[in-house]
Amino acid sequence: MVVGDLSSSSSPELHVLAVDDSFVDRKVIERLLRISACKVTTVESGTRALQYLGLDGDKESSGLKDLKLNLIVTDYSMPGLTGYELLKKIKESSAFREIPVVIMSSENIQPRIEQCMTEGAEDFLLKPVKLADVKRLKELIMRSGEAEEGPKSFLQDDTDSSSSSSSSSSSSHDVSSLDDDIQSSKRMKL
Image (cartoon, helix red, strand yellow):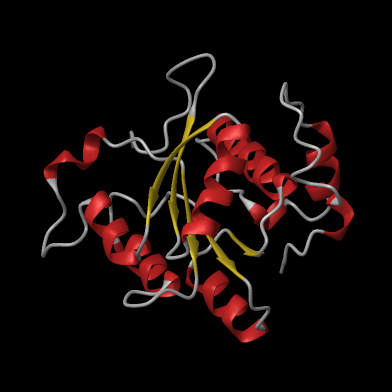
């Protein structure tokens, strides 16, 4: 499948679709992703995300084979189509079901988190999202791209690497002010 192919160039730029109805939250996640050298497309709703993906009609768009997307990050609570409903539609799509979807929320509600993970979310992040979270997700995407032949191994096998992966990341930008306290990250893992 072309959609998640990371092996086409020696230094791939990851493309992330960020979905959030809050302008401020959208700008924060966009900035964190750009600092991590990702290409970012932002949309303000689940409905706009479906339109971007070509999943808003009765059948999938023929232009999807040209869309290269490595990750979808979406807010859970949005008016209209929620992040959970967006997750379900993406996982029902033959073109996009293999793309990792990460749900973000400012509410730490365990049944909601479990419901999203059961439906196929790769991770559930509590807001505010930190640079360490973005770096860890990027490393996981890169690792999964190198092992495309094998089984999907996103967070299922990643039990202790969140602190080590964030410390092994290097960046040419001074971003210490964005992620002052990596240890107090509220990232939720099941």
